[in-house]
Length: 165
Image (cartoon, rainbow, N blue to C red; front, side, top):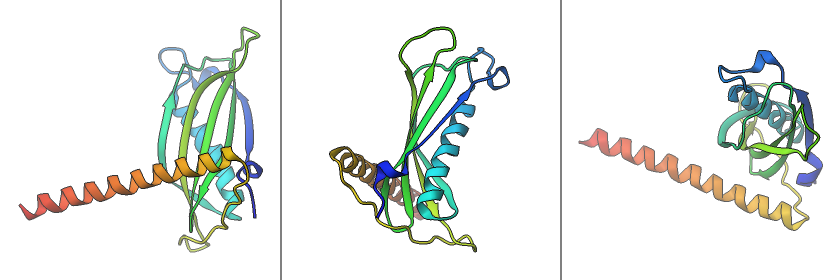
């Protein structure tokens, strides 16, 4: 079995002027792409093959990223079900113009589904939870999953009620 900490991947890159928005900071979409990319690596490795992004459950932007900053993304698996997985991503920066502690700029939770060669979902192995932090992350991922499923059911019920009027 694999522990969540064994799935951790880290990636660093310099933010360039081509990634800037009209305000001169890095466009949020570029940060989202970096988040999806690193989370995809974690999910694909854990699944032992292709895994596709099913949902961006939550993305919080905390402070702007500036051109020249060094963006550090860290991702690991939080939860695994039958074929779906939640990957948590933390994004920090080293400011290009100062020698200070890293700044936490964004966090995200993404859901991936492992797929076979025909694009159908396939099973993933269970996670081996060892540390209190791994168990906490697993529980919190379960809460987010329950929330997603309840929201989907409420929306479907709302649409069904509208159609019956």
